[in-house]
Amino acid sequence: MEFSELVKSRRSCRSFDETPIPEEHLQAILKAGQWAPSPLNLQPWEFIIITDPTIKTRIKEVAEEARQEVIDKNGPGWVKKYEMQFLQQAPVLVVVTVDLSKGGLGDFFGQRTGAIQAASACVQNMMLAASDQGFETLWFTFFQPEKLKSVLSIPKHLEIAAVIPMGKPREAAKAPPRKDPSVHREQYSK
Ligand SMILES: Cc1cc2nc3c(=O)[nH]c(=O)nc-3n(C[C@H](O)[C@H](O)[C@H](O)COP(=O)(O)O)c2cc1C
Image 1 (cartoon, rainbow, N blue to C red):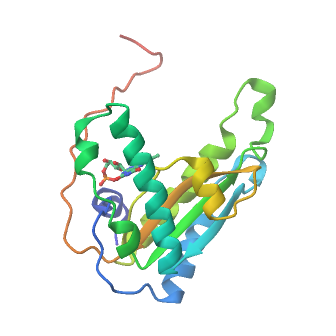
Image 2: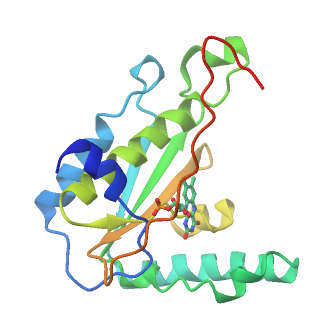
Image 3: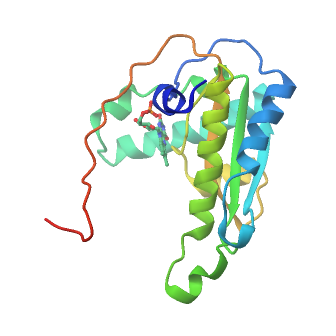
């Protein structure tokens, strides 16, 4: 797909059908992630591919616990209606972990987010690659990190950048509107 069309048509998907993702497509998606930029080219990401329904169910349980926590703390009303069936529907979940110690030289300058920035670029590359191949994705973060790390046996020194359910959308999602970004010239100005 043409690039400017691809970046606009990629859509967060919260309802998938059962069409599997062929291995060669999955590999192409991971490859796109691998080619993301990173500080000192440290490539702080690792990927966990999940297709086992039992593990998907465990992930959904962790997400449901987080949802309940938000409800118990009087969080926003929409959370009560937020269903996370997509965690079981999606044929594949890709979990992207990030090693925060691989942030390059940023620590010298008070920039501590280099690894997260790199992992984010990696996630976006994968999401665009998936869209390009006719699949859709969701950047999912609605969970207590420590609980999900325990479910997936992720070592303590790693964090979770994203859980990415991916597959064929059950229905086309509407594009949430974008606001015009503030663009400044030469200097930040009010
Ligand atoms: C860091 C990050 C975390 C997100 N976490 C969630 C999430 O936990 N659940 C969810 O449904 N969407 C999540 N989203 C998706 C956003 O809601 C979505 O990108 C936004 O509404 C714009 O819609 P679009 O992706 O279709 O353009 C997340 C997006 C980002 C970038």
